[in-house]
Length: 171
Image 1 (cartoon, rainbow, N blue to C red):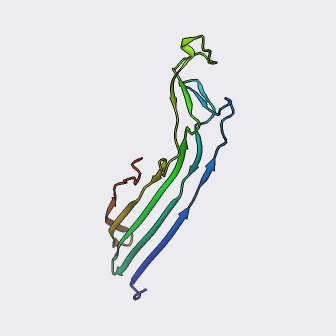
Image 2: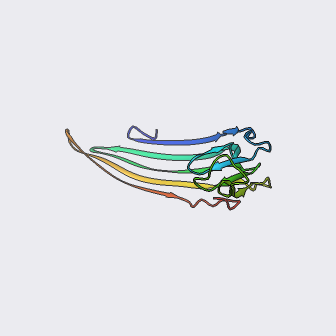
Image 3: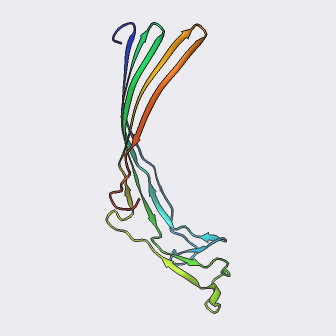
Protein backbone atom coordinates (compact mmCIF):
# COMPACT_ATOMS: atom_id res chain seq x y z
CA UNK A 1 0.00 0.00 0.00
CA UNK A 2 1.60 3.25 -1.16
CA UNK A 3 -1.22 5.57 -0.07
CA UNK A 4 -4.99 5.60 0.43
CA UNK A 5 -5.54 5.57 -3.33
CA UNK A 6 -2.53 3.58 -4.60
CA UNK A 7 -1.97 -0.14 -4.10
CA UNK A 8 0.69 -2.49 -5.45
CA UNK A 9 0.20 -6.26 -5.44
CA UNK A 10 3.26 -8.45 -6.01
CA UNK A 11 3.08 -12.23 -6.30
CA UNK A 12 5.80 -14.83 -6.56
CA UNK A 13 5.13 -18.53 -6.80
CA UNK A 14 7.03 -21.77 -7.26
CA UNK A 15 5.42 -25.07 -8.17
CA UNK A 16 6.97 -28.51 -8.37
CA UNK A 17 4.52 -31.30 -9.18
CA UNK A 18 5.39 -34.87 -9.98
CA UNK A 19 3.29 -37.77 -11.20
CA UNK A 20 4.56 -41.27 -11.77
CA UNK A 21 2.86 -44.50 -12.74
CA UNK A 22 3.95 -47.86 -13.97
CA UNK A 23 2.33 -50.90 -15.51
CA UNK A 24 3.49 -54.46 -15.19
CA UNK A 25 4.66 -56.53 -18.10
CA UNK A 26 1.73 -57.80 -20.22
CA UNK A 27 0.88 -61.42 -19.43
CA UNK A 28 -1.08 -62.35 -22.58
CA UNK A 29 1.97 -63.87 -24.26
CA UNK A 30 4.88 -65.77 -22.65
CA UNK A 31 7.37 -63.05 -23.62
CA UNK A 32 5.17 -60.11 -22.61
CA UNK A 33 4.67 -58.95 -26.20
CA UNK A 34 1.40 -57.04 -26.67
CA UNK A 35 -1.05 -57.89 -29.44
CA UNK A 36 -2.73 -54.95 -31.20
CA UNK A 37 -5.89 -55.59 -33.24
CA UNK A 38 -7.03 -52.20 -34.67
CA UNK A 39 -10.76 -51.72 -34.31
CA UNK A 40 -11.05 -54.82 -32.14
CA UNK A 41 -8.87 -54.27 -29.08
CA UNK A 42 -5.46 -54.69 -27.54
CA UNK A 43 -4.16 -57.61 -25.53
CA UNK A 44 -1.55 -56.31 -23.16
CA UNK A 45 -0.28 -52.78 -22.81
CA UNK A 46 2.55 -51.16 -24.72
CA UNK A 47 3.06 -48.45 -22.08
CA UNK A 48 5.16 -49.36 -19.07
CA UNK A 49 6.29 -46.36 -17.06
CA UNK A 50 5.12 -42.79 -17.20
CA UNK A 51 6.25 -39.71 -15.33
CA UNK A 52 4.97 -36.18 -15.66
CA UNK A 53 6.99 -33.66 -13.68
CA UNK A 54 5.91 -30.03 -14.01
CA UNK A 55 8.01 -27.25 -12.54
CA UNK A 56 7.06 -23.59 -12.81
CA UNK A 57 7.93 -20.16 -11.47
CA UNK A 58 5.59 -17.17 -11.63
CA UNK A 59 6.19 -13.48 -10.98
CA UNK A 60 3.25 -11.08 -11.21
CA UNK A 61 2.67 -7.45 -10.31
CA UNK A 62 -0.45 -5.26 -10.39
CA UNK A 63 -0.58 -1.55 -9.58
CA UNK A 64 -4.00 0.02 -8.83
CA UNK A 65 -4.66 3.77 -8.70
CA UNK A 66 -8.03 5.06 -7.51
CA UNK A 67 -9.02 8.61 -8.48
CA UNK A 68 -12.34 10.42 -8.55
CA UNK A 69 -14.43 8.52 -11.05
CA UNK A 70 -11.60 6.18 -12.20
CA UNK A 71 -9.93 3.04 -10.99
CA UNK A 72 -6.90 2.23 -13.16
CA UNK A 73 -4.99 -1.06 -13.01
CA UNK A 74 -1.70 -1.79 -14.75
CA UNK A 75 0.01 -5.14 -14.43
CA UNK A 76 1.93 -7.99 -15.88
CA UNK A 77 3.22 -11.45 -15.24
CA UNK A 78 5.86 -13.90 -16.38
CA UNK A 79 5.58 -17.65 -15.85
CA UNK A 80 8.01 -20.36 -16.79
CA UNK A 81 6.77 -23.87 -17.33
CA UNK A 82 8.96 -26.92 -17.59
CA UNK A 83 6.68 -29.87 -18.22
CA UNK A 84 8.23 -33.11 -19.30
CA UNK A 85 8.19 -36.76 -18.58
CA UNK A 86 9.18 -40.25 -19.54
CA UNK A 87 7.00 -42.64 -21.49
CA UNK A 88 8.50 -46.05 -22.04
CA UNK A 89 6.62 -47.49 -25.01
CA UNK A 90 6.70 -51.03 -26.36
CA UNK A 91 9.76 -52.14 -24.42
CA UNK A 92 8.73 -55.77 -24.78
CA UNK A 93 7.40 -55.22 -28.27
CA UNK A 94 3.97 -55.38 -29.85
CA UNK A 95 2.60 -57.23 -32.84
CA UNK A 96 0.19 -55.16 -34.90
CA UNK A 97 -2.41 -56.99 -36.97
CA UNK A 98 -4.37 -55.76 -39.98
CA UNK A 99 -7.83 -54.31 -39.29
CA UNK A 100 -10.32 -57.17 -39.30
CA UNK A 101 -7.63 -59.84 -38.93
CA UNK A 102 -9.04 -63.08 -37.49
CA UNK A 103 -8.27 -63.82 -33.85
CA UNK A 104 -6.45 -65.80 -32.55
CA UNK A 105 -3.30 -65.89 -34.60
CA UNK A 106 -2.94 -69.06 -36.63
CA UNK A 107 0.34 -69.50 -38.57
CA UNK A 108 -1.55 -71.59 -41.15
CA UNK A 109 -3.96 -68.71 -41.95
CA UNK A 110 -2.12 -65.88 -43.77
CA UNK A 111 -4.86 -63.31 -42.95
CA UNK A 112 -4.24 -63.83 -39.22
CA UNK A 113 -0.51 -63.05 -39.38
CA UNK A 114 0.82 -59.80 -37.91
CA UNK A 115 1.66 -57.02 -40.36
CA UNK A 116 4.13 -55.18 -38.13
CA UNK A 117 6.33 -55.60 -35.06
CA UNK A 118 7.26 -52.54 -33.05
CA UNK A 119 9.61 -52.20 -30.12
CA UNK A 120 10.90 -49.29 -28.08
CA UNK A 121 14.31 -49.25 -26.49
CA UNK A 122 15.97 -47.87 -23.41
CA UNK A 123 18.49 -45.20 -24.11
CA UNK A 124 19.96 -42.08 -22.66
CA UNK A 125 16.82 -39.97 -22.46
CA UNK A 126 15.53 -41.43 -25.73
CA UNK A 127 11.92 -41.28 -24.55
CA UNK A 128 12.27 -38.38 -22.14
CA UNK A 129 10.36 -35.28 -23.08
CA UNK A 130 12.02 -32.06 -21.86
CA UNK A 131 10.12 -28.87 -22.61
CA UNK A 132 10.71 -25.27 -21.53
CA UNK A 133 8.30 -22.45 -22.26
CA UNK A 134 7.41 -18.99 -20.98
CA UNK A 135 4.07 -17.18 -20.72
CA UNK A 136 4.11 -13.38 -20.62
CA UNK A 137 1.13 -11.09 -20.06
CA UNK A 138 0.56 -7.35 -19.59
CA UNK A 139 -2.64 -5.37 -19.16
CA UNK A 140 -4.14 -1.93 -18.58
CA UNK A 141 -7.67 -1.54 -17.26
CA UNK A 142 -9.77 1.53 -16.46
CA UNK A 143 -13.08 1.36 -14.59
CA UNK A 144 -14.64 4.76 -15.30
CA UNK A 145 -17.65 5.62 -13.17
CA UNK A 146 -19.84 7.80 -15.39
CA UNK A 147 -22.73 8.02 -12.89
CA UNK A 148 -24.01 6.26 -9.79
CA UNK A 149 -25.65 3.62 -11.97
CA UNK A 150 -23.23 3.38 -14.91
CA UNK A 151 -19.57 2.28 -15.00
CA UNK A 152 -17.60 1.90 -18.23
CA UNK A 153 -14.92 -0.80 -18.16
CA UNK A 154 -12.09 -0.37 -20.67
CA UNK A 155 -9.02 -2.54 -20.97
CA UNK A 156 -6.31 -4.00 -23.13
CA UNK A 157 -4.43 -7.25 -22.54
CA UNK A 158 -1.45 -8.72 -24.35
CA UNK A 159 -0.29 -12.31 -23.96
CA UNK A 160 2.68 -14.10 -25.46
CA UNK A 161 3.80 -17.69 -25.17
CA UNK A 162 7.20 -18.83 -26.37
CA UNK A 163 7.64 -21.72 -28.76
CA UNK A 164 8.00 -25.14 -27.20
CA UNK A 165 11.24 -26.76 -28.36
CA UNK A 166 12.02 -30.21 -27.01
CA UNK A 167 15.62 -30.78 -25.95
CA UNK A 168 15.50 -34.40 -27.22
CA UNK A 169 13.61 -33.68 -30.47
CA UNK A 170 10.54 -35.71 -29.42
CA UNK A 171 7.84 -33.02 -29.35
